[in-house]
Image (cartoon, rainbow, N blue to C red):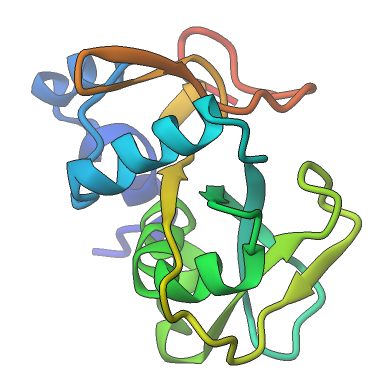
Length: 170
């Protein structure tokens, strides 16, 4: 039959057993705990969190994936350190990026919290970089709510104007 790919993207393939998984906070899969706790510790110690993005090389649209923080606010090297993780997570968040997964690049917000000043990373030296990555939450609570790291609760960045309601339908 002509099963539309759109339906598959929505909550859990329509099986009711998956419905409860949308309740935040979720365990963040595939992200080593140390990277999350490093992020929390760095931000607590005064490092600035910078929003990170992914896009298909050559395209204009950036997709927000989360935030990085690093000692000394060396954003570009921090993005390079977590590049594989950021891009994997991007494909997870945005299925449309998956088909171009071999052709993605990472960028970061120069001001830290805007999608209007995203700069693509080059090939920075990552020697001695201390950094952490906090992924954006999936589902209807995208970029809102709290992440739990090592039993600590961490706010993730909030994006105003999120169209999804609490039922998870946009």
